[in-house]
Amino acid sequence: MPSEFELIARFFARPCDAEPGVVAGPGDDCALLAPSAGSELAVSVDTSVVDVHFPQAAPAVAIGHRALAVALSDLAAMGARARWCALAATLPEADEAWLESFAAGFHALCRRSRVALVGGDVTRGPLSLSVTVHGEVPAGGALRRSGARAGDILAVTGTLGGGRGGLEAWQAGVRDLDDPLLRAYLLPEPRLAAGEALRELAHAAIDVSDGLLADLQHLCSASGVGASLAPEALPLADGLTARLGEAAAREAALAGGDDYELLVALPPEALPEAEHRLRALDLPLTPIGRLVAEPGIHGIGDAVRAAGWQHFPGGTP
Image (cartoon, rainbow, N blue to C red; front, side, top):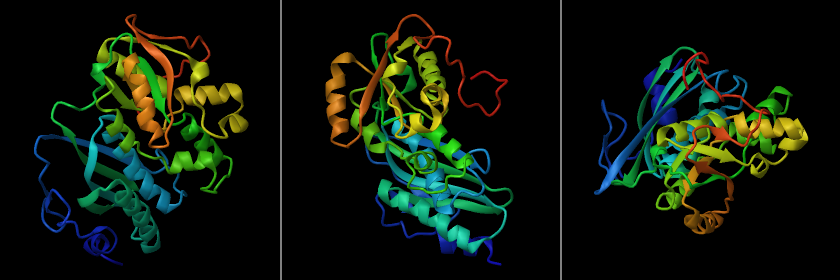
C-alpha cells in the first residue's frame, strides 16, 4: 500500500513554482505566495463530507470537481480572481483507481479556473475533503454581503433548483452525468468570471449554496434591508419542472440549495450593463425582485417557508 507521501507525489503534486505569485509550492512545510501589488487576499475554506455533501457512490471524477467548485464559488461571490488552493483529503483507504479519477476531476477544474494547487495533506479516516482557496481582489473592491441598499435590483445568474433536482434524480437511480439535473448537482460551475464582471457594478453579492431564501436572508441581514421577491420570475433549471412538477420545482428553486449561482444586488441603472457583460459569458442574469427598507422576505406567500440547508438546524442561521 502506498504511503501518504507517495499518494501526494503521484496524484496531487504538480510543478507550480513557475506560476505567478508562487514563491514555493508543495514540498516544504508551507507554500509561499506573493499576492499582486494593490490587491487584497480573499481566502475561504470549504469541507465536503461523504453522504452529507455528495453520495458515497458518486463518480470520483465528479467528487474531485465538486470539492473544488464549491470552494471556488465563495471567491466568485466576492468578485475575486482565483489564484491558489490547498487540499486536505481524509481517505478511508488508498484506492489508487479512485484517487486517479478524483485527481483528474480536481486538476481539470484547476486548469480551467487557472488555480494552482500549492499544498495540502492526506490522512486516513472517513471520506472528507477540505479545500482552501485563495484569490485576489483590487484593494477595497471586493463584493460584500453588507453593501446592498433599498431600491437595488435582485438578480441571479444561471438557473436555480438544479442542485435539488439533481439530488432527487440521483436518488431515483439516474447515473448519467449528461443528465442536466444530475450534472448541476455533481458538477456545479463556480461563477468566477461572472463575479469579476459584476464586481464594479453590484453593491453586494452572495453565492446560492444553502438555498435562495436562506442566502438572501444572510445578505439582507448583513445589509440591514428586506427583499420583495417575484417567485414567478425565478429561472428554473432545465428539466426541473418535468421531474418535480410545477410546485415542487418552484420550492426547489427557492430553498433547494447546491446551485452555486450568484445572487447580486444591483443599482437599477447598472442592470443593462450587467446583463450585457454576462451575455458575453453566455450566462443569463435574471432580475427576481428588489430590496426594500422593510425587514423580511416579501412576496413568497405561505407556499414556501423552508429555511434552507443548515448542518445544525436548531441554531440561528
